[in-house]
Image 1: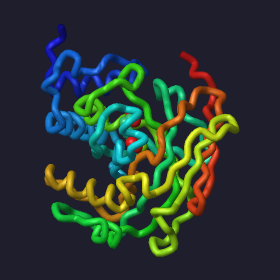
Image 2: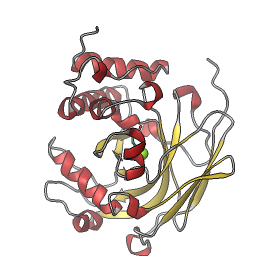
Image 3: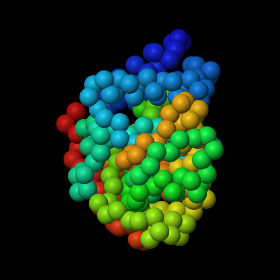
Length: 265
Ligand code: 0L1
Ligand code: MG
């Protein structure tokens, strides 16, 4: 049985990502991999991403909806990092050559105008710091075989980060009814999932507050200009090569994500 520690788990996760290799969860062999340890691993790998030239551009939440929690069997939300390397332009295909088994989920996205620092952030104070709202979709990609993991595994793995796309229209906070905002996800023309903003922690602003309060435990804050993905509203759909996913929001726009070509290796 392998003897894991923070350093070796961090290295193995980045190696899996670079080699497009999945693996069994570390908690099978290291059950002590708890949430606090996992965040230290996540932060260590963020440092490595920045050292190799990536830029920190935002924060993402994971498992903020019941649909996602049930599917993944993990019943607590968490926070992870977004870098510029994860940005997908609208119309670009899923980068299959970088990913292991991409899945797509719809997200409500906040662009921050003010710094948001916990503890004590409420939905109201969180929303007051938001500059604009966009529709978006995250292309998640777990380094764990069949997306099987416990909280410690997935937090260490930067919450299954892969890529994300955002609509190009900014909506003012007062122009969007976030609770009622509806989304449909279609795969190859067939409706798979529907949800509303209310499915995200009761209100996406609650998810934003949660992120700020959670980051405060690590002495961190959400900075002006940052992008915040508030978490998958619905379960995710697989996005294999040659597939087509459509994400249709009621007011935040619609976009089609092409599954792209089969990767060369
Ligand atoms: O692999 C996963 O589903 C964990 C990340 C969750 C991302 C999200 O809920 O937005
Ligand atoms: Mg997500």
